[in-house]
Structures are given as C-alpha cells and as structure tokens.
Length: 239
Image (cartoon, rainbow, N blue to C red; front, top):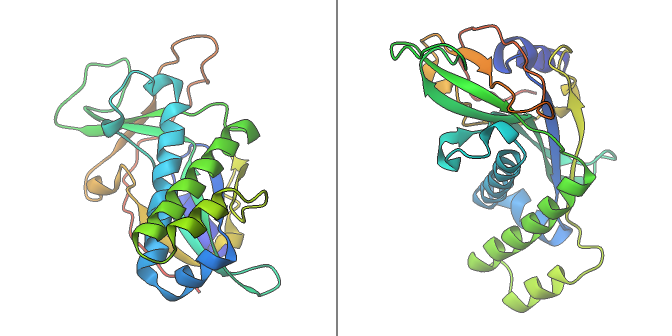
C-alpha cells in the first residue's frame, strides 16, 4: 500500500491539491456491480462524469470556458469489501482538485503561447464542502437508478420507490483532501486502479508543461507553481 501511495505521489499526480471522492450505493445495486464488470464500469463512468461537472462548476478560473475543453485528472480504486471484510463494492476516487484546460503552448498564463510545446493550465476548484456534496449525491442517485432501469436491472416503479427512501443507501463523501506540499495519503486505497483521462497522458513521450491560472480576483485561490515534467500514465493492478 505504501508503494502505491509513493508511486502516485512521485510518478502520477502533479504537485497539486488532491481530493478523495467516495461513492457507495444500495445493496440491491451492489449485487449487479459485484457480478457484472459492465455494470460496475457504467456506475464508475457516471460517478466520474458528475465529479467532472462539479469541479467545472466550482473552478472560478474556468467559469466562462467551454466545458468540453475542460478535463479532470483522476484515479479510481474499486474496493470490493468493507472494513469488516463484508462484500461491499464501492469506489474511492483520487481527483486533482480542479480542472485542466488544454492550451497550445507552454501553459504559461502570462507568456505568449508556443505552438510547438503543448501544455495545460490548471484551474483550482473552491468551495467543495458538505453543501456542495449533497446535490452531487442526489444527482448520482437519480442517474444511477435511471441507468439500472435502462439496462433492465430494475423496474421503473422500484427505482421511483428507491428515490423516495429517507435512507437511500447512496452515500458520497469528499471531505478528505491533501495539500500539494504533502505526500498523498491514499495508501489505504490499494485495489484495482483505473486511470480516467489524465490530461497529460497524451504527452507520455513529450514534455507536458504546467502552470495554474492567474486569479481573476482577490477571492480567487492562490496560484500554485508546478514544475514542468514528463508524465506517463498507465493502468495498473496492485495486490
């Protein structure tokens, strides 16, 4: 587990803040996720899509940009057991706390871009708290149940009933975050890792340059310096 955390810190994540998002779903849905990889991947895609939309909304520097050009950097760990070794498939996703804008140039917000050197600009997210996570959980509940109905795994009437439950069985947590100056503390998340669209993965054999966006106002998050370095991201299975 320590090796995995060191690998993520040294070779995968840039020196930027990282937040852990956790999703758990009702037991009735876990049954299908535990036994069908396609269903498991479907739920993970929905989760990542909602995370991306949330970070896009809460990144002030990217407020007026085309959402199609903004990407997140994340690694998803699929856990198949709970703390008491009970069967409980759920997700722990380590996400860079903001969005990346791909630019033609060195990624320097002030300098004139150089087309020969591709890069990205990082826009930090702000205000990710309990009030932000609550609607995320509601959105995930609706989308995941709708997807199960579309696959014929749930009856529509059952999905409507599950939407009305006071204790729905859906749980989203995003309260654990690390600063860019500290080593990643996700060593407890050693399971199957899936890499989701790191914005620098296309530049595995070329230099990817980093910078953060210039704040638009005093209320904007401070600029964090990021050292340019080469990135190569692949998918691994850790035991």
